[in-house]
Length: 76
Image 1 (cartoon, helix red, strand yellow):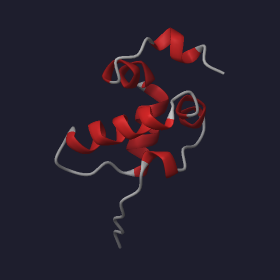
Image 2: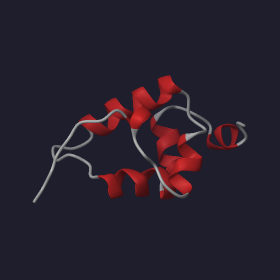
Image 3: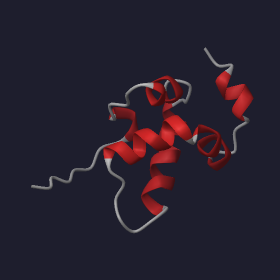
Image 4: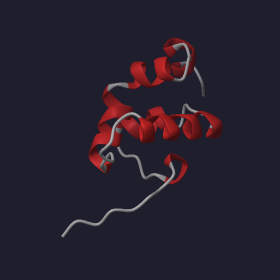
């Protein structure tokens, strides 16, 4: 069975390193990223893809948002 639902990144349950990275972003930045992910491809992202992207491609996330990766990583 496949269940599909829509959920904001602000409400997404990140895990592991993705959770650490997500906490570095503001609510507005997560909203921006949410829009970018939604329009980045036709098929929806699944939970693992979102989590892996936030964990392993966080430099790309920062680039998409126009943020300096090192500055974001220095955020508390």
